[in-house]
Length: 323
Length: 309
Image 1: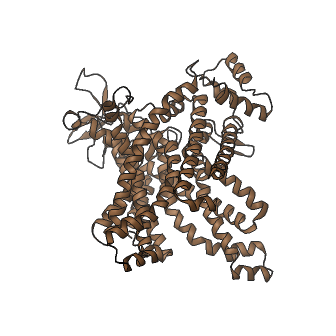
Image 2: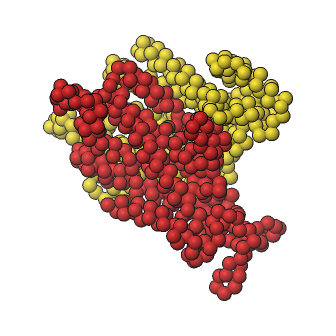
Image 3: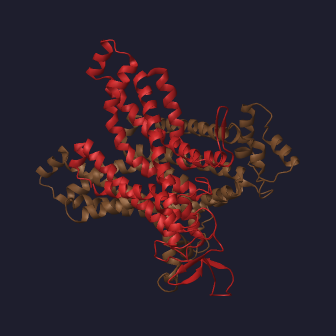
């Protein structure tokens, strides 16, 4: 196991290195783009341009420029915005991170609960009315743009019904759990549902397919021959085996989530997390801010999926051998 | 089959927009129309109406008239006919979805086949390139590429793509998804190479090009076709996400994604501006996903055994 962890971490470090090189090349070496004027923003004076040029070593060779960028991003952490002059970027990201994490944590709980139970219900009732119904909702969930779903949820909770049923739903924003757990919950519950719906749909579909597949396997026939109840066969045998697929999916999804769906959910509900910060960067064309968010976000994704892999190997010993 | 019908209906309605959208819009759906007046039920009303609530300041665009001839779904903040914009925007959304799907699958097939067939150094280089893109969270990669390219265009010596060009989102969306198709293709080719009929072709002295084209491609094709509808749905969702963030389709062009974004400011006063384009995306993507499942069942009878819808 320690060897597996060391190997997995080493590969994570390698991946982070290549990602950082790729980000560097996109931001500093795209043909036809002048990086100094892009970083400094639209209305930069020549003095600012010279400062940017010096800070990022733009007239020096590529490897030195790369090293300088990494130095500003991770070691000295003094990357500053040129749009909101003087704003340090890294502290903004670390301050926003707990909000994004709160959003993801709650959504994960919801989508695992809803996704797995919907998958089980559909598999149990295969061929009956409820199965295609659940699966249709599954397909609908993966076909809805997250942002639009968020808009519709806001429309329902903040529109006509806001004065009656949904009076307790705040209009966007965030309150930390240490300040008020109740407020934290009411601010986050609808973003959680919005974000979770897509993944609940995917998980329900995958789990249903796996369960029905596994129910045709020999070991299930053996279990039936032993005279075990259908209920026990489903939950103790088939479900256990199918969950392995779900866990491996989970590692991938945490990554996709942080990068994409969570960003859009934060924007539409006005949650000031890392995704919202990225969006601010995009609307102001604040390149250092975008670069910082992308780099920290990507690194977090890589580390999170490495952690899930280690957990996965802990649960399922076969993985350690295969890798 | 219903899904195919729905999909074809949406595609035809949207593709034919230039033929009849003029009858719906009358005015150019891309130019603002703040002073416009339309005739409804015998009397004229302005497109931008004075607010009557609160302080009575500012204007609100006209709401849905439910009359196909004029402002069926109302107007947006610039007084443009939302319904006509959805018809034209759908062309852009579908164009991006299908063409980036085609580009992605073509590139992925070529890369996957080369890597799987030649192995060794070719495989190593291609696989490492795919790994890098694979490891990068899709949206973060698309955001990085878009923010640089969409604002200043791409200049590669001979090739020059302007900043607002639709080619940029198409290429960006196509390239971020390449590894998701190329990796399975490589795996399939790898196992095909060990099969007798390929070995026989190699032994009979057929050229690599011939084997790739005549022996391998027909065997890879079903797996690729299965991917296509799902890829298009994924591309449409990605396009709308990028457009919503302001780094996808650029004005004056519109897509369903940009119209959803326009609708955010009017969400509580004129909700249809946001609702309608979202429903269009959902209908097309549901149809594509059901179609994709159907195609998969057709090629893989085992999946049908599982009884997916």
